[in-house]
Structure formats: structure tokens, C-alpha cells
Length: 151
Image (cartoon, rainbow, N blue to C red; front, side, top):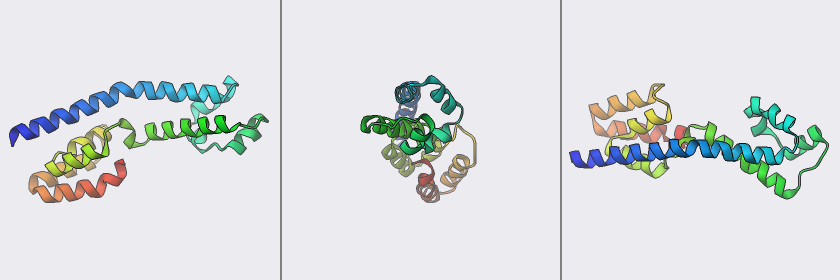
């Protein structure tokens, strides 16, 4: 049983490490798409400071701001860039798959994923750790209830 927990912990750390390694490339890709959409660098810099405004930007608002209408291809690029940035900004953006979360929750290691996704701040991970140590089942139930916050 100890080997199984060690294997699960190693798998979790491997997934978390690969997520952090690819984190920068997603950000660079989103910025590149954003630069492609906004031919005017001043528009890109305007939205650089306020990501929430960029996430809420619609093609009609873009047309009002710039005076030019987005083509279908540019609209799709805009939506793709918004989705990338939204995933990055959300807690689910670290790249740990939902299946790994479920597996580790069943094995009693959900507190580890919660800690990684919350950057070891907040209460979810240590509450789950406490519930898991008290009795395994409450920790699993808590992990599944809190899963909607991460995915």
C-alpha cells in the first residue's frame, strides 16, 4: 500500500512539474495570438493591463474601439486567445487533469492537488487533509464537493 501511495505522489508531482514547465509557453502563445488580433500595438498594451476587459471583449466592441470589423478567422482567434487566458487565470489552468484529481481523491491524496492548485494558500487543502486523516471517506466526499472549484 505504501508503494501505491508513493507511486501516486510521484505521478502527481510529475504532472504538476510538467504543468509548470508548459505554463510559460501557453502565456507566450496567448500573447502571440493577442498581438496577431490587435495589429495596433497600443490596443494590445491597453488590454495587457486589464485582462478582465480583454476576456469580456466582443467583436462588436472591437469594431467600436478600432473602427474595423473582425473577419471570421480573426474572431475565432480572439475567442481562442480569450479561452487560453481564461484557463490560465482559473485555478484549473495549471494543467492537472481532472482524472488525476479523481484518482488521487479516491486514494486519499486530494489535499495535495488542492494545495498545488491553490498555491498552498486557502483552507481547502488542509481541511481535506484533516478529514482524510480522521477517516478516509469524509476526505473523499470533501474532495468531490470542492472539485467544482478547480474544474
